[in-house]
Length: 127
Image (cartoon, rainbow, N blue to C red; front, side, top):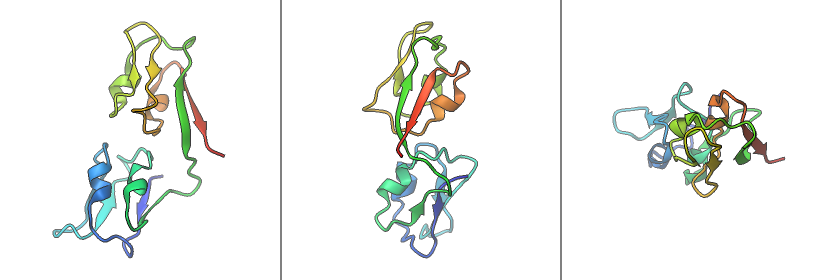
């Protein structure tokens, strides 16, 4: 599952590609008048859909928007995996101590939670 770009709506502005920190969006043709999303790279952070001026980007079926991502201190071992995978560097802390997630930096993709080996990151979704 990944976000999709409606080719009939896309105006080729490139805002989605510029915003994507995971390099999942690229020009689909030589003149960059159309963009496409690589499903293998998309982490469903939804940043592309927020910046699209013509609403050409849509969420996959069953997509649930993340409200908040937090570390459960009792479970966190301070392994740094969350920080290493986060493009925004929102998880911070000291090695072998519980990390915290800077909510100002976090763009709520949930990648850190999916990579945490200790199930120490909780994801809260909007209803």
